[in-house]
Image (cartoon, rainbow, N blue to C red):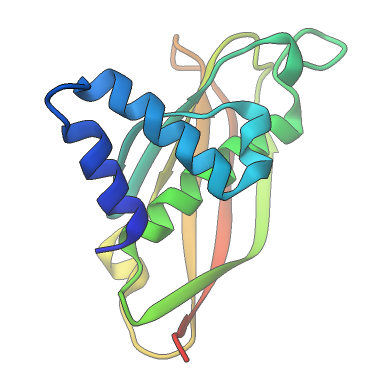
Length: 159
């Protein structure tokens, strides 16, 4: 089990802290491990093999001149969700690195955005060096998709 998945299980499973506080603690710890995620203050809601979900709260620090969530903050949210998914999914004897990202901005992000990254077992199938495509999207509370895309990972055996 990956460190990210183990930490998620520990943080959200503590009876004294509870799921909500545990998710906040995990989100903070995740942002410290990869400091560039701290700018969006991700609030993870779900992490597991083949799926990760987080929320970006619309606040001044992540908005643009229109008052909507900035495009790069949205990309940062997709990448954070993808990173958590990849850590929870990759085999123990493998490693991954992002190889590329294609996104489309489909609507103004005029509120909080929920970012979701998803794959299937078939996406990860195979041995040796290979590419894995992670499907990502971000949506407002009313279901409006504001960003969608694919992040391509290069998966290789650990040396």
